Image 1: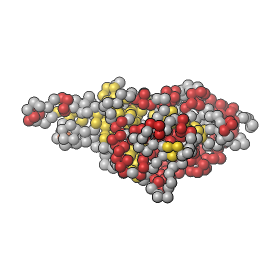
Image 2: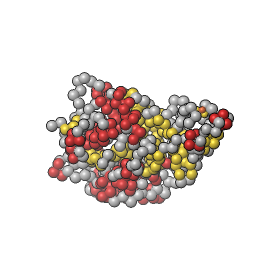
Image 3: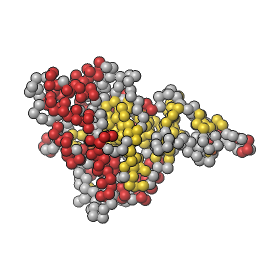
Image 4: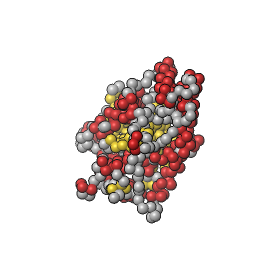
Length: 458
Ligand code: FES
Ligand SMILES: [Fe+2]
């Protein structure tokens, strides 16, 4: 590929297409295991999962598995999850699970009992003298993995030679999102399931609100879901927008906005209630729903939408303060810039509010291009000592387990994947204004994969 053929950030505003090999080719899926996953910072979990010394989790990606452990109060370490003796995986997840966690000061290999402390040092080898003094500590310790944190998330990087820091990798997204203080949020719930689609098919379903009208038509009664979609370096954000280009200004809010309708007091509550009920108690909070419910009593009829919105958020902030939950101070300008939902390359999505976030992570399933692991979780600010601390739960992708909205998203997954295999599919035609996060994702992915470059249609 000639550098003149590469798509620039400016080109993303133009009609373009990207090839479907990235979704349907097994060779491409295999190549990702060498060219993508071992070359990037990727989110392995959250700091709150390992609060105490010795707490650990595992994170699997492709053929690799890593252990992330709290080695000291102020130190998180990570190791490849493999025993240096003859290569047994050191920690197995429970039968039927994909996540392992626990607490230990000593990892003991289940094969021949070699043992390791939390710093990865080998502390026991049966009959060590049999090696006639040949074994050094460098040969027998666990292999370290780069690890760092941002926003309460733990990231690992399997590339020993990577000279990019986590912060550099996440910018400019990290700087724009810092004011939300995600590190002060805690898990509300976390669920996972398997989809019959490529991991990119799944994560892209959450990159653009362009699908709201077609997939979640029940939400249209509350407002216009016209969206902007912007690339910020390797990452992207989308948010609400005005449809007429003459007045195309971004709205200065996240998903927390006043409802559309004759009486914004009533519609704001209706919208909040419906989101809470149909997005699995996420994407808003009980505090926001309850404060919205009181709007008709607290405000006179005819109060303009903007005033309704300000009153509602002020009261919700007070309600939270009364129960020991403080809101971060995020300026209107910061809110506007932060938009509605972020995609951090390659597989992390954050739909944020001041006191909550709904998040997704998707991972490939072996080298099967038609299957992936989908994980979703809600984080929220809780009063100290009242954090629910949920574990991962496998949940069939049904309305009962995930709520109506997510089940509607899920209903597209396998169907999109099957459609991309069709010999009648002429190629993707993403929306240049509302699906730019998707095309930016392919622009960046192609850079790692050295294949699959988006190109201009004209
Ligand atoms: S493979 Fe771990 S002790 Fe032998
Ligand atoms: Fe959706």
